[in-house]
Length: 303
Image (tube, rainbow, N blue to C red; front, side):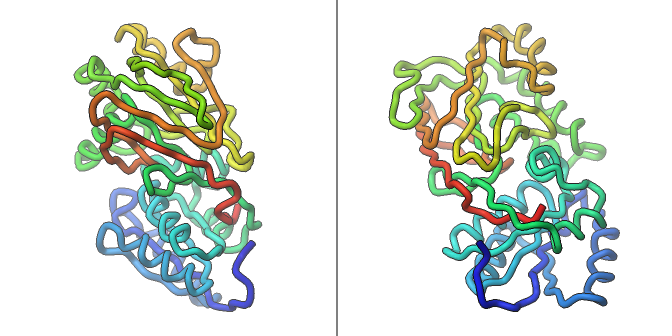
């Protein structure tokens, strides 16, 4: 469990750009808590700063509370897991998606209740994963949804683009303009080839959590504490059919659809005919091969 023998106050890391920059309420709540409890508080200024702050805190045995969205959470868990230390993590969701915190862990969206839980909730061991050297807590995927994640990053700068509206707009944009470019993949799980020859997929999603992309329940049976990835393989289908399936996928009711297959595994290897986008907890990168392993109970989260 947590690193013993430390009495340092928790470190609260707040991303001031979260919630489209409207963090007045979060700052006020934290200021109120600091009048009554010993806390350390830092606001990030640069990309990657949350990861380094979390790494340093974990190395010294200091618990961490992250106040931000999925991207900031991803930075913080990369900092903790790369530190070699185990400390408690609290999550105050303040982004546009908050899928892992709110849909999987069922943490409250209301800031005061979320902060209380982040500081005083019960510590629970949860699974994480690593893909191509990058840690993740919720999901990584290759295919249309990774292309959507790239589009989300581009659309966030526009007014009124947040939450479900942001993700639906990005999804429709990619479906209409980029659908034919869905990747050709092979993949294996736990060393066994499942698709040995290149096939075109709408998406291949590997997750600990049940939802991502602002509530799309891609792996609705996923258990974040069972030591296994849940994998959804969605084979290529005509665009009109894909458009029809989009709301079914969002509701997590796609298990009986002929294009969809589910798997469970501790390791996954995916190869693409051409370099493909990958989203990892909402962050994106591009490669031709993706190798992932589950990390059972790797994180301690207060819930």
